[in-house]
Length: 257
Length: 257
Image: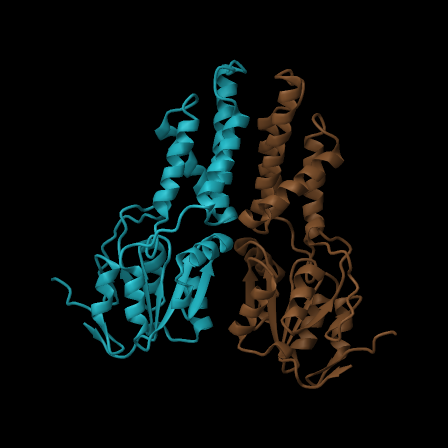
């Protein structure tokens, strides 16, 4: 299918589309469950953490601070249950105050994580920028976290507009389109999350390209990652994006039947 | 002084300019220091909290989540010092895990605080909106916190543009002017914080109106709240704003000599 001179804006997700993010969270979670090994097996800690995170996401939103607060809440819940079962005879275990101190340190380290661009990102953005398309960064998460990462990435200059969103639902994309003053079919979103970057974008009537990443947070997972939609396309890497954008037209390879 | 048909955009700060904010934080802090009364006198806890908050602000930014994380860090610091002095003979004191559980609850209550508009805000915004001026909301803080408050306020429709900023330094205002595509002397900022809403705005060459609020966070305080600047004005209440904006011109009352 060819889309002739229609798309005016290409928006990119940031975390795990332009740079490494989720693996740092998973490393932090590994360190976190180890801190609690005196109390509960790793998989049970992870399960409880995910439950608490999912419950808190409406309140805390996305980003490191909410993650740290949910880790602390998990510890307190485990401590409470451990005390009600074993009483206060938990003195041989690592003290809760030590564990929480280390969680705060893990959180600060996560905020200061190095910024690693994914392969070919800078080159691809440069090539696309030579076209008469406007590039937008549309990322979900904590305002300060994302601004910090963008600054470290050195990519800010590539973008005409930066939009840091508290959420990526259909209504959030509709607001973004209004803000950018463009029609749905003039907008293309590129990202790694089917749930956040693809489905709501297709719903508002825009185009979406999925570039999968090897690590996806449980909360972002959807059952079916294969979309059958004329405005949806899947690419292997970001490098595959530049060959299909030429002379301000976007030609997607024909879908296999 | 009259400014004839120059100002195109009036931007309003939100917290403690349009709605009550700081008093909720101070109430939370009062409850927090009470939780620690077995360990340290209230004023020492508050002093330590402010030190830790000031150290963390670059990392955590503004908003409830960073405040909660700093409260937790304060507890852990007090616990650590108490243990090093008294050993583990602190069993008669309120357990640290209980205290931190209650801090998480205080934080969630703060996120869910009721939204109380300051007097005459809605009416004043309505009057100003009848002029050919664009109204902007320019607020510092956590993205989700501020979006939630704006939604609760019912004021979103009053504004042409909403800007939630991680910080309000000179460079942040410069970026805002660029984004709004206006010149510095076409922009007027209205807010309660000399540090965040007035000084950086005057520095970029724009106009600023200070409407003081009775409670100011220690971190936002500046030594001299009286500014002597031709682009600076002080009003008692937001209601005083509408009489000086007429026929798209803004006439400030003459300053007392």
